Amino acid sequence: MTSREIFADRMLSLGLARVSEAAAIAAAKLIGRGDEDGADRAAVDAMRLQLNMLDIDGVVVIGEGERDHAPMLYIGERVGSGRGPNVDIALDPLEGTTLTAKDMPNALSVIAMGPRGTMLHAPDVYMDKLAVGPGYVPGIVNLDMPPAERVRTLAVAKGCSTEDITVCVLERERHLDLIREVRSTGAAIRLITDGDVAGVIHTAEAEKTGIDMYMGQGGAPEGVLAAAALRCMGGQIHGRLVFRNDDEKLRAARAGITDLDRIYTLDDMVAGDVIFSATGVTSGSILAGARREGDYLETETILMRSKTGSVRRLHYRQRTR
Image 1 (spheres, one colour):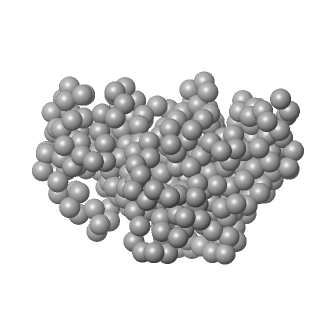
Image 2 (tube, one colour):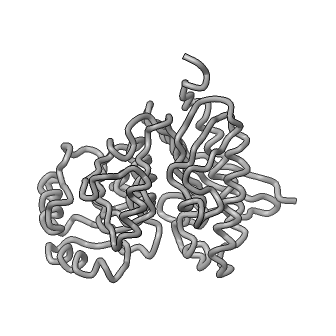
Image 3 (cartoon, helix red, strand yellow):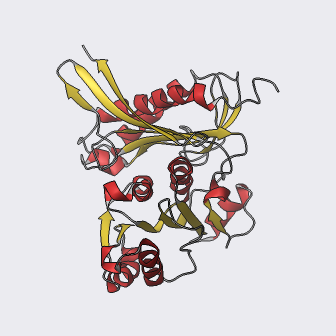
């Protein structure tokens, strides 16, 4: 087995943390400035620079869109030094551009890496998502269940009332019926304005976050990133692509997807070992945001490996002057 075939996740993990840290630091300079595009561009540039320092032969499978529409870290872009293992990379240099521009909680810089062929090449379309944390039998809830049935089923499994269940949902007009049905069971809903990768991750630490389940439509690429996190932390996620027009179906075809109605599980989205790193840009329920302390800039990163189930929190301090 050559070095190009070995996925040395232990050795690569700290390098991956440096990648998300650099992107978060770059984006943090534009917190509250109202410049979504500028913050995203800064994060992308910093992430690419750090990625290209890693000894990997990487391909971006989840990125900033297709090449013609996203010249920065686009799907299919090659990154790394070209030496070392062949890897798939899923990334969102700034998950929460609006959150950053408005100085709102839970903006993150997120990246995941696994051996070539590990991750679903999800097109840039919507995905209907359903996620719960660890400790439940496989398939305890599924996308074919009405939302109210999902809540009642989870409450039975958890041994509690439906009133003790909290569901995280993106605050969008398309979710109004979903929200009404969930609330009809007596369950609570935590609405988030953006950042559904963080929303799904919340389910993996329900005792800390108070979130038992995630439901609703968000970006398919973010679904793969969230699945990478759950692969490390434990939990379940189900996803079904949602197509609004023929152009979106064409995107799926270009990504090699032929069954447009397929329901993807965690194993379908992330099929093997993966490492995952997220750094806080703005402070939230998962991570502290980038912040200045005197002459220093500090960040907090969560770094995870699925092979060992390890979850590390890294505090980075950098002198700024």
